[in-house]
Length: 256
Image (cartoon, rainbow, N blue to C red):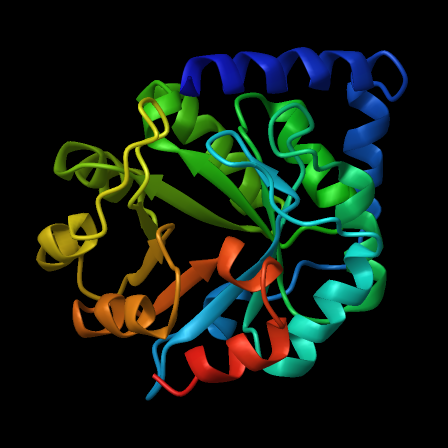
């Protein structure tokens, strides 16, 4: 499934490239104001920090929420204390778009993550051109040399990279990149099985000074507490927010 998602994202990127060339998207990226400092925004603190996600759907559950106004949702996240906002831009299974990201960028002043299946330089330039401050690289989807190329390009553009892992071996590959912001996704994107204890098993292997992000599997405040007690500095939350009153739910999470 991960390979299919990545391949689909590349096909969609190629379609966009036919309208906006690589040279043009690079020009737009370089013309953006400097990216926000996501590492500072997500630095460890007394309480857990939350990356709140604008998420319309998922491959495992289908449609999650009818988000008429992604900018309004993101504004509520920012007002509620989210340290950063993730916007799913994958079109096929998550029903997102770069337009969602652009709308959110106009509405909030916290760091934005473009969450997609990033596998080529065009997508990285697109992210910066649309106002993203962070991009996601999924270790399982990329060969090491190519992932390093994308990582280096993103950092040259001033962005922060959230490097997503699903195993100890993948965590080592993230460390080899020089990643400072490392996520452990409890959901295996090849099988969609969920393992909420995976983060805890890997937490001691994070390098000193890195920011530890727990991803997926959050249903309620007990799951936030579980990740926090296991050493998470940051938790990325989508479904639990878009399927509830986001301000109330976010407030309860930020108490942990």
